[in-house]
Structure formats: structure tokens, C-alpha cells
Image (tube, rainbow, N blue to C red; front, side, top):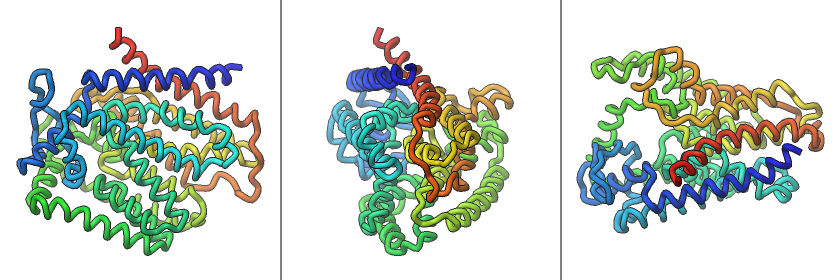
Length: 428
């Protein structure tokens, strides 16, 4: 009874949240990351330095200093055409590009991991679950690129499975140029012996990296890497990677004279260990098992220096895979089911952005303020070994589905509640 009530009510609240979100977006009432993108792309268009603190002189409000844009030069090349439009119109267009890209990426995820019968019967609720995921709401609210990552990475895998090597390689190479951390796909394609995909990905990366050099010269990359070395955002709450955890543990960002070399050294050693472990692990997984790709998605975020919360839409596929696998086991593995729900709770917990410099003492840094790190860590554990033998997988059980879905819906509802309440309060 309670599950059916959630099933009827949850879509209404998700749709209401996005209606309010879009309303505030077109009124320019939201503090969007796209403001920094737009300002940086404008500076890029004028051949001035886009990698410094800029001012929003295109907003109807007073001049505001903006966060530094962390995206590489090709990203600015991509959105430069939007700077020829007014900021409001550019924001709306960018919003719909990301929103539609996310829906397509979610479609690919569900088509790959969910049985055709389940998808045909529940496609509407599957999309609602994706849209109700806290990270999807946040990524959409600040108009970040999480849904774009979902489209290119999962879309590439969709065509990878269908032996369309050129399209898969192009999509992966394109997104690796926009965001460096999906470069783990190089190792994935190599270990799967898909050499044509690997070569197309590399060639696409090279060409797309050359475009900013052709239009702006090699100096644009000098400015970019100089900026990256000066950023100290790694310890902020929304960074779920193990590098973010190390930063919270070892660094006080308020101390401008603190040396970072030992953190970089520890990160390099752990990164190398994790990379070797990952390569060996996917080498043991059957090539037709989506678990290796799901593990790749999670390890991308876990190993990256910046595994931001708004990249978590990528996790919709690993969670769909775990759900489908758990439901088709001969007997439900309660241990894995509970860990999966705990991981979902941690990764979907609705916490606002807290810079490391504003965090209280170390106990909170390593517990409450690192819950996204622990959520990813649990997900890595769940995906590192098989949950069931596919040859003995049983049909779906209604009791089993309810055991998994009811708490999952509670978790998703809680994650949606906070932004919805904020939007409604702002409306009043």
C-alpha cells in the first residue's frame, strides 16, 4: 500500500520540482555555474584570459565576482557560440541541451541494464527515478555538465556494445577532451581488446585538443594548467573522490603557506595502486558483463581529483545494474542489498555545498562531511565481484522488488524533499 502511494505521488513531486526549477532559472534567481562558463567563454572569444576571477557584467544585478572556470579550453570552444546570445537565452538553451542529453543518457542506461519487459512496463517511472536523484536535481539546478557526461559516456558504451566502434570512439574521445577523468575508458577499451575503439578515441582526443591551439595558440593551455595548480577546492564537501578525502584529512585550505607536495605524493601512489587493481579486476570480468563498465564509471569518480556530486548522474547505470542483478539471484543476498541501499542513501543524501575552509573540526570532516566518499567506496566494493551466476538467475519476485524498491523510494523522496522545500519557500 505504501509503495503504491509513493509510486503515485513521487512523479508529481519530481515534476513540480522541475517546473519550479525552470521558473527560477528563467527569472535568473538561481546561482548557476553557467555564469562562470558564460563569462569565461566571453573572455575566450575576446582572446583574453578566461582562467582568472571574472566579473558578471552581463547580469541585471550588481557586478559579482565569479568562481574560476575549471573546464579545459575545448569546453569554452564548444559553448562560445552561446556568448553571441543574451545570457538569459543562452542559459535556457544550455539548460535544454543538458536536460535532453540526460534523458537520452538515462535511456541508454536503462536499455542496457534493465530487462526489456521491465523497461517496457516501467519506463516512465525509471525516468522519474533518474530525474528524482538528488545529484540530477543539483546538476540541473546549477546547469552543470553531469547529464552531458551521462549522454556521451553511456551513449558511447551503448554503441560500443553494438560494435559501432567509430561512433563509440568519437563519443568517448569527445567527452575525455571536455573532462579528463573519463580517460579511464582508454584502459577499459584496451583490456577489452577493442583496439579500433581505442584508436578512434585517441584520434578524437588529439583533434579536439588541437582545435583551441589552432584558434588561440598553445598559450591557452599554459593559462589553463597554471590555474589548475592554484585551485584548492579539492577538500570541499561535494568532492567524493579519495583525493578530496585526503585533502579534508591533511590540508587546511585557510593556510596559504601550507605545502601540498606530500598530499600529491600520497595521491600519486594510491592512484597508481588503484589503477593497477582496476586493470587486473576488469581483466577477470567476462567481456559481456556490464559489471566491468559499471565499475569503470565508479572508479572514474573515485580516482579523479574532482569527483563532484553533480557528476553522480553517471551512477544511475551502476545502480540499475545492481538492482537488476539482485532481483534475479536465486535467493536475495541481504548483505549486498543492504549495502546497496546504504550506498544509495549516502550518495543521495541532500547536503548543500560546504567549502573545506568552513568545515568544523576533523571528526566532522571525516564522517558527515565525507558521506559521498563512503557511498562511492561501498559501490566499488559491491561491483568488484559478481553477485550471482547468470546461468542460475531466477525470475523477478514481487516480495524481492518491494524489499528493494520501498526503501529506495524513501531515500529518493528524502533527497528530493530538501530542494523542493527550498524552491517552495523561495516562491513564497
